[in-house]
Structures are given as C-alpha cells and as structure tokens.
Image (tube, rainbow, N blue to C red; front, side):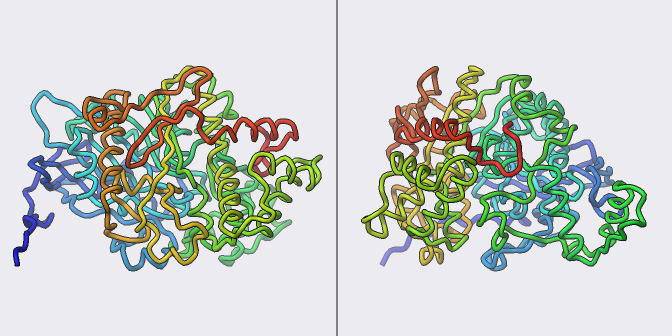
Length: 551
C-alpha cells in the first residue's frame, strides 16, 4: 500500500516572523507559504482604541501607539454576540467589547512593487459573525497568491453598534487606517476596493455613497446585498424603539415626567447602559421576529445626517462612479428558509401574497395572487417540491433579486462599469446538518454560497469537502475577483483559458455571468421576472421597505 503524505506546514508560532511599521508602532506577523509563494499575515491589528468604559456607544477613537514589537499572530476578539450553536464548536476566537481589530494578508513585499487592496466587510445582519471565520490559510491560498492584499475587519455588532448609531463609524475608521497604512504592507493606498457579503455588501455600497468615505476607495464588490435591498436601511425611530425595548429588558426604567426633554431621558438611559456587563448586549438573527416574520433587519444603518446626510437617490447622484461587481445566489432565500425553519407550502405562499397585498394598499388578495401567478406560475395542483420551488424563487426575488435588478439599472443609468453575476451552483456538502430543514436539496447557489468558493469559508461544515465541480468554481471565482481588484476588469488570459469571459452590463442589456462549473453569460437574467415584478410594484405602488419612504 502506497500512501502520499502532504508536506508539513509550520504552525504560525513557528513560522518565520515578518515586521511592518504602522503608525502606532512595529507589528510582527508571520509568513505562510503555499505553492512556492510566501504570504505575509498580520492578525489582530488595532485600528481604533478599545470601545470600552466611557468609549462605549461613542465613535471610534484613534488607537494608542505601543512600545516595542506587537505580536500580531492571533485574530482579535469578536464583537459581542450570541453564538449559533455550531459556532460554539468551530470558532475558538473569544468575544469582547474590545473588538476593533483588523487583519492584513499580503504577498511577500518586493522593493518598488505595490499591490492593490481588497478591504472586506463580513456579513451577519449587523448582529453576528466575525472576520475570524475567514481563516488565514484559506485567504492566502485563494486570493493572496493571486497578487492582491486583503484586509478583513471586525466591527461593533448589534446593540453595541446601534445604540450609538456607530456601526458605520467603525468601518470608516478601519478604512481610513487601511489607507494610511497600506504602504507598510506593500499596498497601494490609491487602489483600494471595498467589498462585502450580505450586510457587509450593504455597508460597502453605502460607503461608496457617503461623502465621508466615498473618496477613500476606487471600486466596490457587493455580494448578496446592496443599498437597494429593502432590509438595507432602517428608520431612526424604528431603531430607537427597538433599542429602548432592549434597554427596558435590561432593567432600565424611564421616569417619565422627571425628564425635562427627550435628550435628557436618552442621556439617562445611555448612562445606565454604559455600566452594564458587555455580554448582556449579545444578539443574533435566529429567533428574531423582525428577521423571519417581517423579512427585515431590526438594526441597520439609517439616514443619520452625518455618514448618510441625505436620501439615497441624492447620494447616488452625487457620488463619483465606481467600477463594481454585484450579484446573488440563484436561490438566495434558501438559506433564510432553512435558518427560519420555514415550511414552503401553499399556506406559506398565501401568507406572503397577503402581506404583499396589504403593503400595496389598494390591492385585493385575489388581485395580488393573480398577478403573481402570471409571473411565477400556479401552485395549485403542484407537488410539494414544485410549490416549494415557487416559494423559494418568489422569496429570493423579494429578498435580493429585485434589489439586484435595481442595482443593475442604476449602474446602467449612471454608466458605471459593472459586472453582475448569479451564483447558480453550490456544494452538495454546504448544508451539513441543515439538510434536514431545507425544502429543496439542490446544488443551487444561495445566500453566502460565495464564501465557499472565494474564501473556502463555510458556516455549517468546516473543513468543506470539495468534489471536481466545487474545485472548478473555487478555481475560477478567486481569479475573477482578484483580477477585478487589480485592474477593474475580471477577465484575463487565465480566465479565458478556462473558457470564461465576463462582460459588463450595457445599455438595454442587463447581462450577468452564471457562475458554475462551466460559467457562461446569461443574456436574460432572472428569466425576465424582474421586469414583470417592477411593472407590478409600480402599478400597485408597492414598496417593500418598512415604514420608510421611497429612497
């Protein structure tokens, strides 16, 4: 019997050290080698002062300088959150309110050579997840060996981020730090691409619109979300009430007439909350009524007058155009259906139709059902699998696809060079234990499927076994995205050799790349459903947002 042994790789504590001079002092990282290429890794670099004590709920402050050499070989603590049960098994990185750290992954520095930077914001509904989930080995193997630098960041999540409306401030502070210190790692501060997935994609899109941040970078990547999603932006009053409800659950008792103004009452509440143990602010999406019953995020960015000083259409008109990548999974809603244990049957379909009819404020349930039947087909008389498919496609359109359509249309109008994709494939091993709760166990891309192939990061099974089809997607997707970060064009000789040519959208031509083991261009994305859905929404004056005027 002949066995083939893989070469042993040095543990990071034993790997060769590497130093970088950042503005706060000297940082010591380590070298990770893969396929004959050396990558420099720096984990847990502070980009702001610890947001604890008097700094809780306040805007991020500059990090303090340090003396000597700071070892940066471990991920910094994750923001306070309630872990999903699988995270308790997989993740070893602790939680802390002191969470404002970032990680830098870079090719080995060469004299006179600089690399473009991909600044990545993780998702998680602004309530959960962390940069620690994206392992340094996978990051180096998938992207750094392609000749780009990747920066991943932690930011305040949940109530610790939104009691102060400071969630966006953390990302801007991290982006500013990255721009100031890029050269220390061989990076080009004038070639920064900001990207993210889900809530991170929304953040990237909003950062491209904000006058505070839009000039800090040149390109963007939005995976599984954008500012057009109905769940992307919330309302100040809505968030305030949600946070007050949390404060009352933590023991705060407003004294009503004892306050001479709302500002005084707010100050009293914040003083009470500032001294509570940080773990009491943890939250996650599972079991949150607003997420699965109302399909919205209770904690999300707002038009705050500062970071977002005006309605989004105005900011879009003012913002300089940026080349971008955007896209979603083919069955984007399938993940949410599984996490919410939603039964995709005729009863659920009628419930969705009823909600849409109510939001139309002039449409009867019968009228809405007939209109949707023309677009999605008749569920009556269909078997369970076909009814589930209609539910999944409709929910995917409402959650993400229609927003993706608007994103494309806006880019077309502004003549931004934009490359759109649909991830039409996912691993048969993605779901792990969740196979028992998904109504369609098919190899169709869903929310977060991009993470499998771009970063080799999976939420439910780690490490993820890959077959030949998985490896084909995991080979082409990082090449396309790294090319875009480097040149603004995802295509190269290497991608063309693999039979892939990704064309940007053009006027009157909303074409997208179907990413799969054999990736091809789609000339009619979403099978024409979005045009029909758009006409329906405008005819019935239907807005998917909650308590927010059209923006």
